[in-house]
Image 1: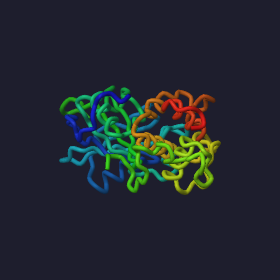
Image 2 (image 1 turned 180 degrees about the horizontal axis):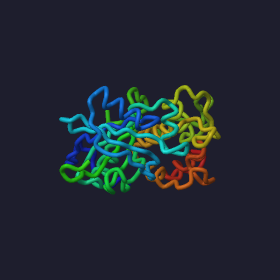
Image 3 (image 1 turned 90 degrees about the vertical axis):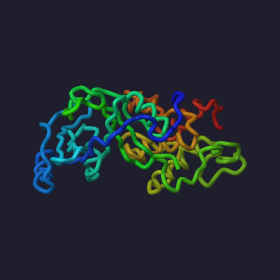
Image 4 (image 1 turned 135 degrees about the vertical axis):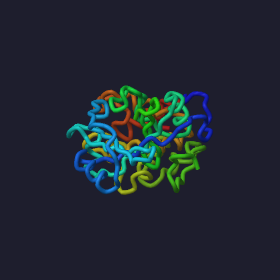
Length: 151
Length: 127
């Protein structure tokens, strides 16, 4: 029922950590705080993703490869509204992969629970993302790797 | 330990539903009906959310009166998959639920989830 893949550690997924998601009540003050406190540079505009029901913005340290994604609910009906009511903060880890379909099959075979099958994401110019969660309650996002120089 | 498996996971996935493992009809566990699938769901709710208090067959799992929040529900489902040795795919079912309020939603209550598991496992009602 989960295909024929065995759960082999890291089986050819070529994953790399793309970003850490931080859930905040509002993007702008959080963005200013990260810039002021850690010296992050702002890499994107604030983008609305209607599928994720969220506003997002990406920041990065000048010489780092991993982004910080600030995520904010787009209203009371957002999927993230309940999590924010509980305090927000560290929200998820996102891994980039060259083959999201293979990565999803492998992560599922490894015991992660698939929350959302791959769908295009506005923040990644239509590259697909998928969502998983483990029994340890950590949420994982997987994104199709972009071309060099792109988010 | 498999990635994502909760620490202190006391129940063996393999054999958890073997005869007598849970819900021996002759000696039901405290407060649990003599139904091993239903008892498994109730026991798993208590494991993933130990502070929810008494959980029964009609305890709602979704909606405003749910005994678990959305993360708790997913934790319940992934833990049930593990306890059942991945013999059921609750993830596909979860992603396919277009209307969480639909009366046929198997995640509606503890009993409806147990019914779904029983059907998926090919077990007769009340087993």
